[in-house]
Length: 272
Image 1 (cartoon, rainbow, N blue to C red):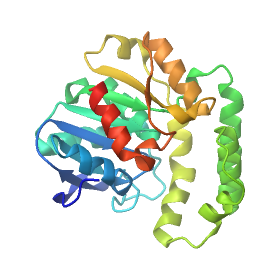
Image 2 (image 1 turned 135 degrees about the horizontal axis):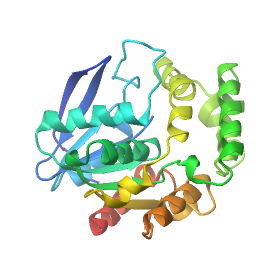
Image 3 (image 1 turned 45 degrees about the vertical axis):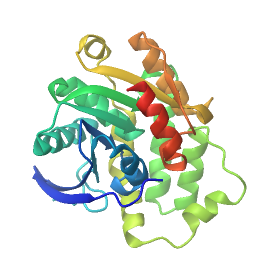
């Protein structure tokens, strides 16, 4: 893996928040976007892409090092897209390629709709676009139950329900190890904010398909090879079908860019 990559950090004041961001490398701008995943989750991928790109990563508003003025403010895809547009403007290297994963893919799609002048290519990796599915009402009800379970303080119960709805199966004991063990106060706070103020707004967001079909921004739908049958496999295929395109397979599953950054980078370079 790439080592000794220089990282420049900064903070950008935006309405109601302060965004922490990192910049690596030189060349065409690519932004790596998560929600709720922060800049740290993308660091190995960013290091590899920095060989020939300027790579922007950031903590989404309300997560880790990006505090918000109102802790009760919901984090919506359109709000996060506006933040991303301002970050791209800050670097003055746009329009950018944007790789968004999960909720970050929804952010990237929102940016393509609202500010297509800021992004020439979106790689939407497994966006949870529940609104595109026929069983969306059942899934929305399940999400409400998941959130209520977490807000009652049942952490492992909420994650068990979330993973079941996402059709993700973990080996025995992994759930308790991941979410029942000691975690930092920051990790717990970020998790709670995601459940309370981000998950519902992200999964209820409906893309403007007509706009995405006609906008100049190139939209590529990505799916993990190991995600077959999972909820985000279904939502991603629904999006690709609605856009009249074929999804692109990437190594790994929903978090393939974390588990195999080298393989993911190779595939991303092929796609771009």
